[in-house]
Amino acid sequence: MAPLLVFMVNMGMMDLKKQKFLLERRQEGSKKNDCCH
Image (cartoon, helix red, strand yellow):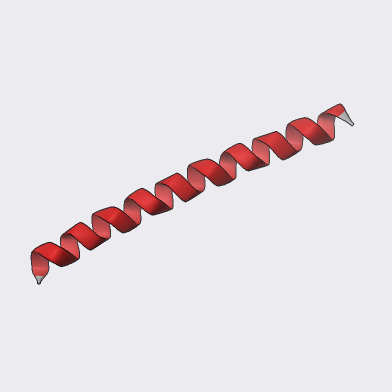
């Protein structure tokens, strides 16, 4: 039970980091697009 819980928490943390990273990338991309246009 415990190992599964730790695994789920780790996966959740990874997902949060990935989403944050993608969100930042998207914001940077939109800034560049605004610059170009």
